[in-house]
Length: 360
Image (tube, rainbow, N blue to C red):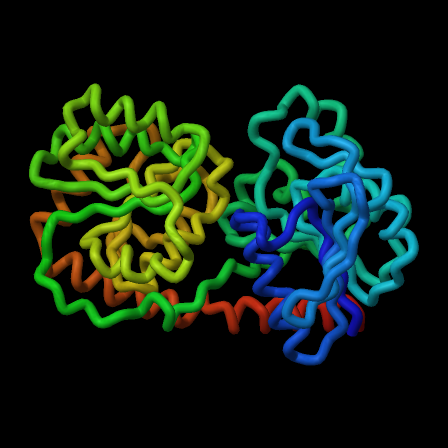
């Protein structure tokens, strides 16, 4: 089978979608399929390389506008390819429109990673076209059933949607926990507005025994570091910046509780929750109408609280830190759920079964 993945960027660019494509593409290539990834190069020149058995075509880009590459070369390259399946990773308007007009694949699959949240004015123009593109696709992948029910784009097409959750290497994070229970909180992720770390910092003021490690970098880092100092938390909060990928399991192993305090639908799933669950950590997250409150089962693998509510966050943290036995139980149940539902092997299997179904 010839599989084409279509998006704007690819490894080594850091990002959840970029890493998801890499995992899928490399697993499919290892299984003997012909796999091509078509993305945009940071420069104007188009180039092709092979990475771990995957043919990566990086089309030259003219510029970037509203986080989207503008490339004349990518649609031209796309029109020349004849894959069995094109797998579009959305939101990516350039790729979606180019494939709708010029694509020659036998079947089209779209993974709807997230609704467009911020560019609402632009979406008024693009929205009607996007609905045509969705109707033309053979299948649409959603990463959680919760997202299908809450997305205005997916809900009208629920009969065309298939749930394929994201996956992680569970064994990579599943280390034996030998340390005594403590009060170490952990956040991992890009420091963007919708991650809600500011709410977590304000909650920490009300939990004086807790310490927090923030792993990651991004546009909000300076502002949130300044907020931590302003709130008198400088001695209890550590911003590590981006750490090497192979250090992440140790960061999870050193924590007692994982917190993802998202405040907007831009946090569509929360892969870091899977990593934390695989590591045996109970998780606290928020109800933003996406996969976060489906991945974390309230009262079973962690706690789910309202967004933008530092008081509710603080109460959840206090509740779990005061009950080590509940933390241990939730951590075990989360790790079991990660093994059963959220392994990379299971994710790849589900995607391949979907390809075979649409081609049949």
